[in-house]
Image (cartoon, rainbow, N blue to C red; front, top):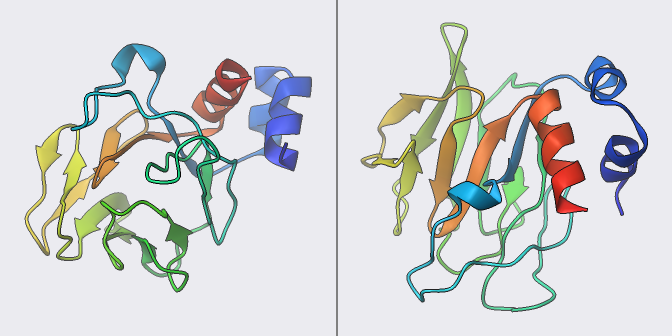
Length: 163
C-alpha cells in the first residue's frame, strides 16, 4: 500500500485534503465504469506515483490505474505507455506518447498527441492536437483506460472506496 493510500485510509477527508493539494487521476467510480471492448470491466492494478508505472497483477494484457498524483504543472505533463512519460500507463491501447496535461490561461487542459486509440474528455473524442479544458470530476480516457480527474477530496473518496 502506498503512503497516499495509507494516509487516506487512516485520515478523515478533512485532514487528508488539508495535507494534499493538486490533481489526481483516479479510477472511474464503479457506478460509472463502462465495459471495455472485450465486454469485461477492467480490474484494479497497483497504486502509482510519479513517474507512474502500472502493472496489472490479475490480467497482464489490461492495465488500470488506481490513483495517479499529478505534480504541479510548470510544463506539459506527458501521458503515455513508455518510461519517458510523466504518467506511464502500461496498456497496449495507450500510445507511446498519448496525451499531455497543460495549463493554458490558468485553465487545466488535456491535449491528444496524435494517439492511435484516442483520448476522450467527458466522452468526447479529441482530434490529434486538439485540447479540451478539464475540471474536477471529468471522465478522461486514454485508449481503453478510464479515469476521473480528482481533487484531494475525490481522491480520498476513491482510495477509501478501493479498499
